[in-house]
Length: 180
Ligand SMILES: Nc1ncnc2c1ncn2[C@@H]1O[C@H](COP(=O)(O)OP(=O)(O)OP(=O)(O)O)[C@@H](O)[C@H]1O
Ligand SMILES: [Mg+2]
Image (cartoon, rainbow, N blue to C red; front, side, top):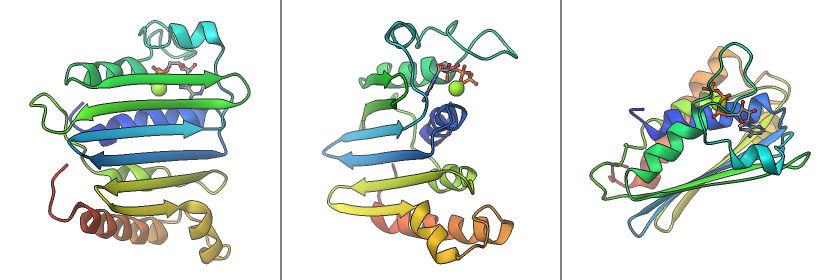
């Protein structure tokens, strides 16, 4: 995939499908290391299932026989000197953590995280995005946004457009001229 942001969208979509009510995405760039973790409180997976989940033929999809989200992210991490880790517990939730060496020539660019975050706005589930570069950090919490919206749906077109530009601005300011 061209952007890590699209991988994040893929992995977070797994959390949505697993009926999570809260997903926390942490993106941290520090000391030449980019760490992305996606943690949910969805239905989780059994130990046996997690052990084989990065095999493309492991899927609970019914429309096709292969699931590519996790295998592709694992491959993106490991071909650029990074790591992939998944922890899951049935009935508790799942956490996927990947690292990338920022200066690795094979690393996929981070891409448009604001776009991914605004694609994932749902009235009945919440996301917390914690975006950190060196010692600068920004948190976007849909629970706080919903409170401020006072009943206006978070997925209405005007709100989506507004939050998208707000996220873009904040991420840019955290980047401080750096292109991740
Ligand atoms: N966060 C999660 N919580 C519970 N189960 C998960 C989670 N993430 C993945 N799974 C399980 O692992 C399987 C494989 O996930 P993966 O993203 O690799 O493929 P997929 O979602 O099946 O298909 P695709 O991502 O290509 O649409 C899923 O079908 C699902 O059963
Ligand atoms: Mg998937």
